[in-house]
Length: 384
Image (tube, rainbow, N blue to C red; front, top):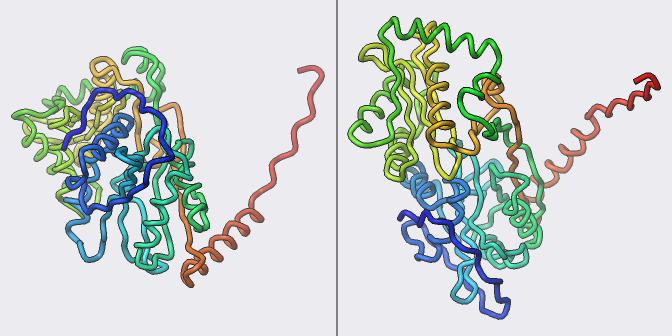
């Protein structure tokens, strides 16, 4: 189910004279070839927009609770052309039944696959069909998304046109680095604390028999995967609620050529591990962990430096992305921050949807009233 990796030429304009048709599927493997092709084009922007990512979520997360989660991939077709694929999951939320993005806490970025020429008006029949078959859902939620993206604006407007009351909300901060230089120049621009930590601890780490490895697949894949799991078990992190997800993600990345699994060893013991995903000119720092018993050697910092060197000098990526959250350490490695948002839409024709809308509106008004006024501009100093 791997979509083509070559860039696809621009599609011709959409003909509004053709008949619209909507189909629904329960798994990405059921999608027709042209639906997979559209998702393949979306995947060229971010791997989490592709069919393989959604299939992984279904197989390792939602298939474990099939009665609690109803997965659907809605396909909008105009004549013989697929215009959109919208992956959703329905489940019980705080306000009753909720339909939303086929995503969860493993998802750093969500977007439907949209044809280049599609508008909110074109997408409206699909949203009406989703609403009609939702089983009386009170809430529709799509997150996390890029608020500057076309998908965010088109989907938000289509939800409004479908008669839902839409609000935007902040999801999380996202630290990233647009790549402008090689590893040596990049390291030179880091703080003296980062540079000194790398230099000082590299010597200590080597003296303790330390070594660094980057697994990309092949015969070292399963050993690297076992090393990651051993480190994770000795780290501060809580056990994964879906234990099959990360191993299968690593195997998928190895098959697709995306895997950069870094492991720090002291002798034959793994003491730190990081999962980086490199695809389409991007390096996503997806998971990291270290054995706290070896914290003094800073194996996590050394491993980050080694993977950063690989991304810059070998993979020649255009962007490095720390994905989810505003953890303080990320600012030491990244220079830019952006935000991810979500869309939440209430159905005012349902009692619980109306209640949610009222609660949301009042909450927004209260936060606006409590917001501090902007400081008055400082008068210009003629001497400046």
